[in-house]
Each structure stands twice: as C-alpha cells, then as structure tokens.
Amino acid sequence: MIRPAADLSLNRLFCQLNKHFGATAFLFIAATILPVSVSAQDPKPAEPQPPAQTSTISPEEELAKLRKQVAQLSGEINRLRAELAKLERYKTIDYTRELMLKEEQRVRELQKELVENAAKETVLQKRLDEIEEEERPDRIERSLAGVGSVKPEEEREAISRRLANEKRRILAQLETLRASRTRIPPLITNAEESIARLRQRLSELRTIH
Image: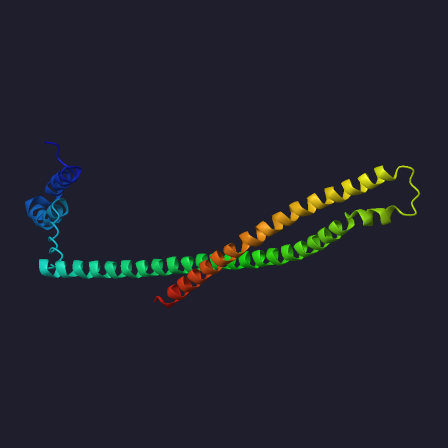
C-alpha cells in the first residue's frame, strides 16, 4: 500500500527531532502534531440531513380535487357550447334576413315587369287597332290618292303586305306579353308567401335566448 506524502514528511521530521532534542522532546512534539495529522487525514463525516417533510394528501382529498377540476372543465365546455349556439343563431338570422330581402327584391322586380308589360301591351294594342283600320280597302285607296302611281295595284298589294307583316309582329308580341301577364301574378304570390314564412322564422329566432 503506498503511504501518503504527509506521513513520509512527518516520519522525517520525527527522526530529526529525535536526533537533536532527544526522546522527551520527540514525545512532546509527536503528541502535539499527531492529532492534527489524523484530523487532516480522516475528516469527520458530515452529519446526515434529515429528510424533507412531504405533505401527504389522502385519497379522499385527491378525489375531491379531481372532481372540482372536472366540474370546472364541464362548466367551461357548457359555456363554449352556449356561445357556439348563439353564433349559429346569429348566422341563421343573417341568412334568413338575406333570403327575405332577396324575395322582397324579386317581388318588386316582378311587379315592375307586370306594370311595364301592361304599358307595352297598351301601346301595341293601340297600334294593332290602327293597322286594322289602315287595312281597309278604302283607307288604302285614300292613301294612294294624289300619288300618281303607274302601277296602283302593286302599290296596294305592297301596302297590304307591309301592314300584314307589322300586324303579325304585334300579335306575336302581344301573345308573349299576355302570357307574362298570366305567369307573373302566381310568382308574386309565391314570393310573398315565402316572405311571410321567412319573417315568421326571423321573429322566432330573435325571441330565442
């Protein structure tokens, strides 16, 4: 076993003291130095620290704590669900209002079309009455009087063809307008019924809390 350097130094010191001062001085110095050497070589071990005290929670307390956390989470979930339902209701209200506004706009457009068609029909009917009057042979003869045509028969036929073609065009337009006059009122009725339903739906949505 290898001896520490401190032991070797002490041995040499003891030998020199023994040589110069004799046995008495050697024993005195050895008694003084050895405890210090032993204390330096073998330090006293530190006292063990007492274990830290830990708080212990009973299973009942732990269960109560968990139940409280679950109740808090459930309350938060219910609150979020209520907020989501409110947002969905607002979205439905906006969508329903938009549909109602579109239906109201459609009713206005159909009513406008009905009025405009009636005005067009009045003008066309008036012109049709005029054509029927102008198609009479005596009116055609009067229209040619004073013209001095070398081919009066061809002129009469040309006037008759022109009036007949215009009459056919007017009759076709009148037929289309009369068909629209029959078609539009039911569309207006359906749109007004839809508006009534949407308005009722809006009223119901706004009363929900």
